Structure formats: structure tokens, C-alpha cells
Length: 146
Picture 1 (tube, rainbow, N blue to C red):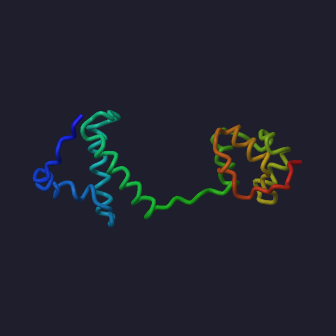
Picture 2 (picture 1 turned 90 degrees about the vertical axis):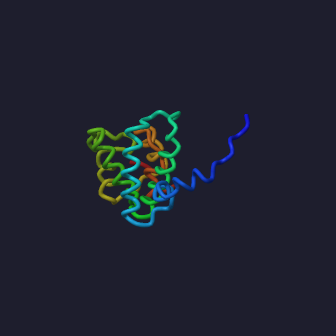
Picture 3 (picture 1 turned 135 degrees about the vertical axis):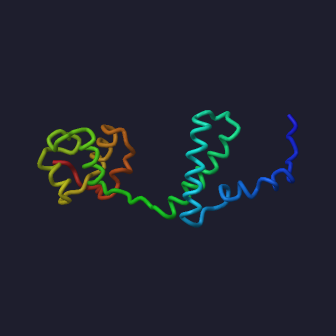
């Protein structure tokens, strides 16, 4: 299938409209404009990957994500913070985590007096269906659950 030649004069005529959306966002105003355009495109395109403007939506999304990563970095929770969050999401108490050990061992982990070992990390990752990396900080090779 032969590719259609790029119509540079037509592109040039519309570039002033597209440039703010397809250039690297350097200011909050650039970012806000792009997010507004994304909202409008989402309303129009939805999840129709075959829509003629779907790739424009995807491209703007990549640029928005890059701006957010640079300007709004998300802190990575510690292993204990992640465990607390997962416990809350699953309505679990300390005595409902046999993957770590007894309620006393869980208490020591949650208070920071004890670190998770590899076996515990793997078991918790399986239980909650998350990557073991969620529990990576504080992992000790030689520490065993009580």
C-alpha cells in the first residue's frame, strides 16, 4: 500500500492551532491547555482506537504525562506504608497476615522495628496481587519471620 505524500502547505496552515498541543509543555498554562484539549478529545474519541483523532489524543497524553512526571513527581511509599494501605483496602487486621507471621511480628514490621524478609515479601505480593517491588525497601536476606 502506497503512503500518501505529506501535504506540507495544509499542515503549515493548521500548525498554529496544533503547535500548542504538540510541543513540549514548559508552563502550567501549556499543561492546562493540553489537559483541556484532552478532555474534549476524550469526549469525542472515547475509547475508539480507530477514530481519526485517537493518535492525537495519545500524543497529547504522552506529553501531559511527561510534564506531570517532571513537575508533579509522586513519592514512592515505603514498604510499611504500602502494607498499611493494602491492609486498609482489604480491611485486614494485624492478626490476618499469616504471610508475615504472628500478630506480634506484624506489629513489629508496622512499627519499623523489624524489616520484611524475602519470603514475606513474596508471600505478600502473591496475596495482594502486586509486584514484590512494592515491598522492596527494608528487605533483609537473613531475617526470618517468627
